Length: 141
Image (cartoon, rainbow, N blue to C red):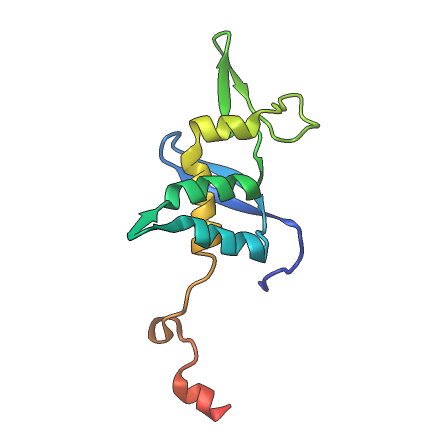
């Protein structure tokens, strides 16, 4: 399937070891400026020291691109009841603080989203294993 070049939303399916279930989060594609800012904020130089701020950059930029969560994947306890959280304003379970709740209780999911989108959105194919083109193929073209 080709990469779609628009501003639509994407879905990331995650196996969550804490809940022992599959979760879905929805996100927008980051801008070129956000990709550069993520890289710049991941490592900072202070005098002669390098500060690795990967977790902070993942939290900040993961939260920026996080557009929604699947209703029922996350719950809060209120009055002894499990209440599902929805990011969709049309849902009766919509919680306007859903992003704050994600950062407080599921920052690992936010960080995983950022790592997936900003750090591992593509990889170079191993030509021998994947049957990709070789240098000889490129020279023929």
